[in-house]
Length: 166
Image 1 (cartoon, rainbow, N blue to C red):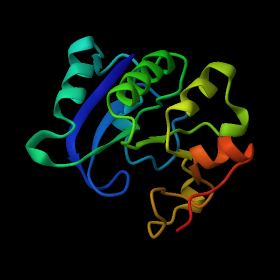
Image 2 (image 1 turned 30 degrees about the horizontal axis):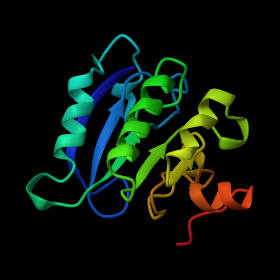
Image 3 (image 1 turned 45 degrees about the horizontal axis):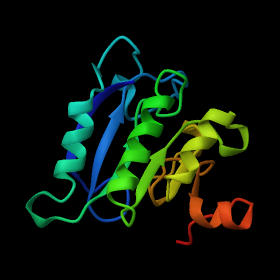
Image 4 (image 1 turned 135 degrees about the horizontal axis):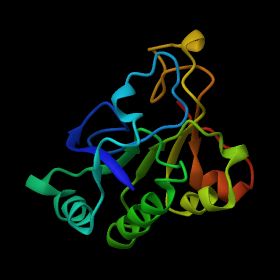
């Protein structure tokens, strides 16, 4: 897995303050994407054990309570999915009560079996590609109206898509 950056204090992605991991590489290339610099699979840095250790050691740095946001790029593309699952698994082992937010251009209805593995670790999933023609900056946690903000725990329990209540 490759990543673009880790942002320690992010107030734009998730609820409250999160530490954000930006994966590198995206096959979707959505027109109007605000993060086009993360598309190139040949850019970024290789995600290593030290990077995961940094996240785990600094998630509560300076007594600030943070959750984890994972976005990109595309966290669930074949090049990144295994690494993202490992990050989520380790994070939840260390911090079972902290939330993990994830943004993906894929829709959960079309996830591969491997992509579905990440669901057992996520709390909130924003799915669907950004669509310039449906852009709406007043929406919570998403950029276009076709994207869904999914309560993953409730969705798994009820075996149907349950959206986060606004």
